[in-house]
Amino acid sequence: MVNAVRSEWIRIWRPTFRYGAIGTLAVFAATISYFIYSSLPDAGSAETRRPGATTAADLEQPGGMIYALGPISTIAGVILLSLWALAAASDYDTGMIRVLVQAQPSRLKLLTAKLIALAGFTVIACTVTVLATAIVARPLARGYDVSTAAWRIDAPVELLSGAFNFFVPTLVWGLIGLTIAVLTRSAGVAIGLGIGWLLVVENLIAITAPDLTDYLPGGTLGALAGGGSPNLDWSLALGLTVLYGIAATAISLVTFRQRDITG
Amino acid sequence: MSSITADHLTRTFGDLTAVDDLTFDLPAGGIVGFVGPNGSGKSTTIRVLLGLIAASDGTGTVLGESIEHPERFAHRVGALIEGPTFVGSLTAWDNLRSLAALRGLPKKRIREVLDIVGLSGREHDKASTFSLGMKQRLGIAAALLPDPELLVLDEPTNGLDPAGIVEIRSLLKSLADGRRTVVVSSHLMSEIQAIADDLVVIRFGKLLYSGSLDGLMDDAVERVIAEPEHRSDLARLLNAIEAQGWSHGSTGGIVSIELPADRSADVDRLARTTGINLRQLTPQRDNLEDLFLHLTGSSDAELTAERSDQRNSGAIS
Image 1 (cartoon, rainbow over the protein chains, first blue to last red):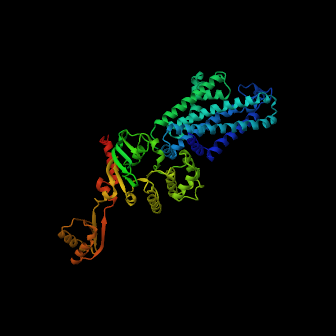
Image 2: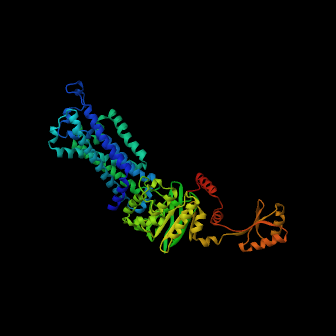
Image 3: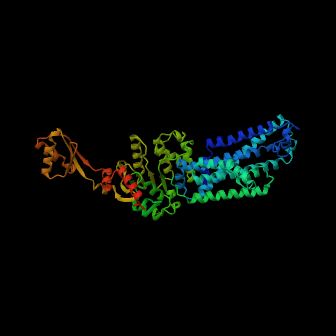
């Protein structure tokens, strides 16, 4: 298994993935953080009474240093879904799958190694994102007169729990991307279906059956990223997220194991 | 000992029988040619034997191990199936390093295979910058990583120019030393004839011939090609040939006489005694392609059309 993971890691840690995914996430982290702070309304203005608007009070809470991870989580999910889908489907697109399966006939081992390697990549990507968010937070807070006094309260716990709530949904988005890629053997289709589901289907369902939305992948993973939501507390969101991850893993393993390598 | 055996091996895809009750026994050592026209089922057969596709029926062995357990022979087999495949943005070295890691092989093996295929010095170039011939050689290098007892190469000269084909041919001959079997699949019969010791010939997934190349070439027809200097002499030449009782045919002023090559002088003597000068006198022997056409009676395009007709009529199950 170690050999298979090493092999997969060499292919995944290529410049396009490294700079493309991790670099993009870091840039988004900084950019979204900037927009959050620059969009803060003046205290007492009409905008502070707009539901959902981020206020200075929100940012001044313990854990405010990584507040931006919540809004970043959807984009991070899309990026990692795309990356995992590319990593899986490119083996079919290039024909590399023939070489891999001939060299290592245990498909369970091959796909598990890919999962482990991609999970490791996701850990690195998420760590960079959390760090980027935390690093830009302080100068932005200073620039927009947001108090950081409370950020020191339980800082390690807040940082770790925020990172956890960011990492787990991102990982499951990746698993979903990989599963669709294994089913369709196409990165483009996998990415299109994943984004289409998140942006179109779940929004349509939200209109017709809003109560259901919280339990769909986008709603559940978004709730976990935000530390829970009014309709889905943190522990339930975590449980559902884990179930989605297990289901995606099982589907991809069974499909990959049984399917003929004709490409 | 056998390198590969097939016992009533069959693979169907819906109403298409890609591999149809194949039974053969390939010897170990040397070069085995696996030939047939495009779409004859060569690549599908290779995929079934190497465990990429499950057989619909029948069994087989690779290096004495059942094809249902490819994990038992994978470390002894190297394969290049339907063209080289690499991550283009990685260097040749990193591509091979990834595959070496998968097989648990040391890095020094990468250097060795690059030397064998003649790519030393280019290992730090991205695979996407390689020419087609270099990619083919890199694919062969990847297949050689486990120092395999069995090397299976599917169309290794595909897309190469004549110089590239000669290079690969020379490389394959050097690889087929006493302890290694090289199975080369190709639709280019001339290439197989130049290097193979044994042959498997298939058509529409069915076996046409399995045995030594020399054994098949025993059926090759020899003939002498003669062309009179003046077209007006053709009729007299044909009459003289008929008087000898030699089997012959004529197309466009050229006569083809079924005689062994060492009797070319007899044809020359006959022509001169008849007062005919010959512009051309050439001994000729059927090549593998000619023999294949005799076996099937059809060209590649005709075979494809025939198969399509059979499928449309439901004759193929």
